[in-house]
Length: 173
Image 1 (cartoon, one colour):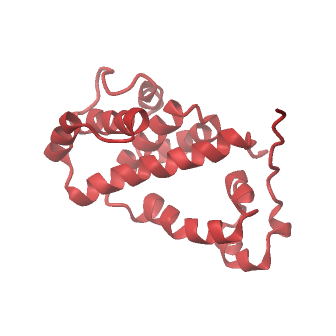
Image 2 (cartoon, rainbow, N blue to C red):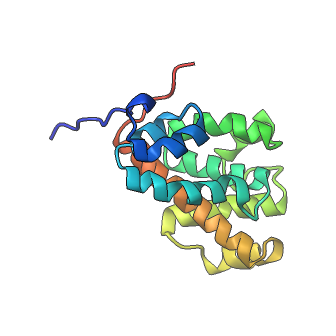
């Protein structure tokens, strides 16, 4: 069975129903240009996306650790490449970003950061956070933060499905 990739929809061809989102995003990324093929989905997605990337109870550094780990586990190179820069902006160093690939057992993580990476691993591997990981989360994160951990990982797993299924191309510089 031959797979036909869905091409990003050029912003000038987005349906008029998406004009507010297009204005908000400025120059949309290719993942948004793919999602623009389904206007209702993109309209529903944006408030959720905005919560995760701007209004989460997690610190930006914590969020980026989760996203980078999820991108690595899902082999979502597109997402990884975008979040390296965002991780740097959130206070991660290049060696820390590379260490994300080694996971929660790598040396030099703070206890809360190792626990975040472990939670991402649990979500990815088991679609659930184990009781032992939850006990560790309870030491560092309140209920709202724990929910934000799960929805952040879940959102980026969903994006990885789209990215990998349609081979979403990186934007040209």
